[in-house]
Image 1 (cartoon, rainbow, N blue to C red):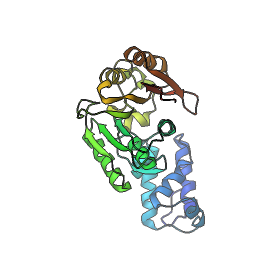
Image 2 (image 1 turned 180 degrees about the horizontal axis):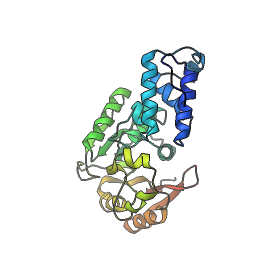
Image 3 (image 1 turned 120 degrees about the vertical axis):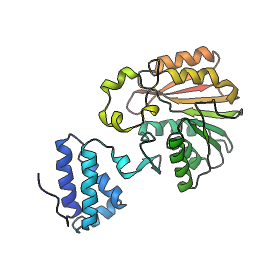
Length: 288
C-alpha cells in the first residue's frame, strides 16, 4: 500500500483512498464524495484542481476521514452532512441518515396535494428530512414535526434554522405529546426493523446509526399498530396518512390499517427498486 504524501494532489489522494477502500470492500467512488465534502467542492472544482497539491492540513484530515470510513463509519457522519431532496442536512449519530427511498415518500405527498394551505404532521422526524423537504416545496403549508428523542430534535431544529424553513418541533412519543389538533396529512417513517433481522443487517448501520430509530417490537409492526389506534382524533375527515415501511411488511401494514379504518382507501406502493416501501391511508378519496 503506497503512503499518502503530505502534499498529495486530489488525484493522488483519491487513488490512495480507493486502494484503502477496495481492501475493505467499500465502493471506491465514496472517496470522491468524501474529499469533495471535506473541501466543499463540486465536481467541476475537483476536476479543475485535480493536479494541484493539497495543503498538508487537508491531506492529514482526508487521511483521517478515509481511515474512519475504512473501519465502517458512514461517510455522512464523518462529514456531518447528507443530501436529501435537494437539501443539505446536518446529520449526527443521534439521527438516521436520510435514504433515497424516503424521497419517494415526499414525492407521493407532493403529487397528491397541491393545495396552497395544508396542515401536516411528520411523526418521528429525525433530522427533519421529510418535514423540511415538504416545507421547502410548499412554503405555505403549516408543518409540525415530532420526535421522541430530544437529541434528534436538536439536529432537526438546527437544520430548519440553517435552511431558513419554519417548522414547529415537538417532543413526543408518536402522538402522545402533541396538543389535540387535526392535520390534513400525517406522515411517518418510524422504526420498523424486527429484532430478528439484526443478524442480516449491514454492520455500518448497526454499529453507527441510532437503534431507537431502527428497531420496533412485534416484528417491526408495533409503531404502525400504535399509530393506527391513536391517529383518528388528529386527522381531518378527509385526512391522509403516509407511511414508509419495510420491504416485507406491505400486507401486514395494509391489513392492520384496514381493520382500524374499514372505509378508507389503503394503497401500497413500491419504490424504484421494486420493493414494497410506502402505504397511503386516505380517509376519503378526494378524487385521488
